[in-house]
Length: 341
Image 1 (cartoon, rainbow, N blue to C red):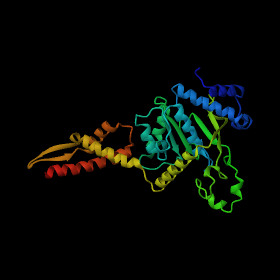
Image 2 (cartoon, rainbow, N blue to C red):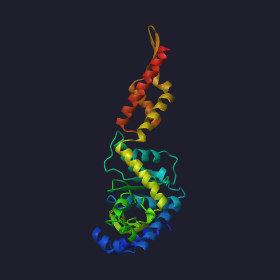
Image 3 (cartoon, one colour):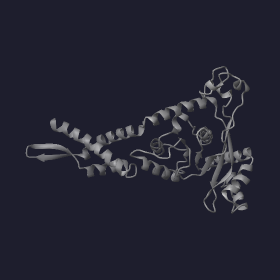
Image 4 (tube, helix red, strand yellow):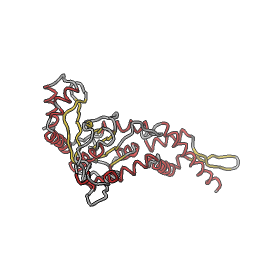
């Protein structure tokens, strides 16, 4: 079989309702499909992709507090098991697009699942436009590496999706605990997501999420429009994973607020290595009347060797100009040391 049960189901619906609008399909078909049946179809599609050298690229969109990140993690855990490359929260969740892009292009990853959590609508920085473009380009060719990408954000951004999941519940289904509701410290306890002021575990207290329901949309082949297919319902992740994710998210928020990123520091390390490895090509010996001295090559020559090392697509022209200037400054210091010695 060269198509998954989900693909066959979608073809059947499209053939039966070829001219149906988004609203008609959403309310009359997609919302009425049994959640368990459709969720099983979705899981079978993931199994099919894992066993047929395919991959998964999808977005999960929704308002703050709807559970899109936790739902995304639930999908990522399933993908990690099916693709035999375990999804690890600390390793595979990214909040910085340049960090994600670096990992995607490292070349050593195969059948790995990446989660870009709470991606901003507007990316800033000297490499921002290049990062967004390269991510989209990567999605279109990542079937070769069979890596999986999940984007959790308030709105769907421009990516080469296979799947789009949209919020359908104003609030996810939650645990009802009468003991909590009658507690005089109820409001104080709610201020901490993953703690309680009594012996009741945080995952059993009133208001803790039980599951997440998101509408899945895929492309209709006839007009390439994304149309609703059915509701995928996944349970809340295990408590220990929820605790770990909370720490990761808090850490990423602090880094975002402080504009901290590892990508710039990594660039500086890379150009240090470049200047060292290519030093013989970047410095020339000039004969003068009083002897000889060392001088850095011209900016154009350094830029040529820079592209030889990093290729012409890794950095934007603006980034290259900045990095080459920094390399030339380093070379000037090296030349001064050589001339003085």
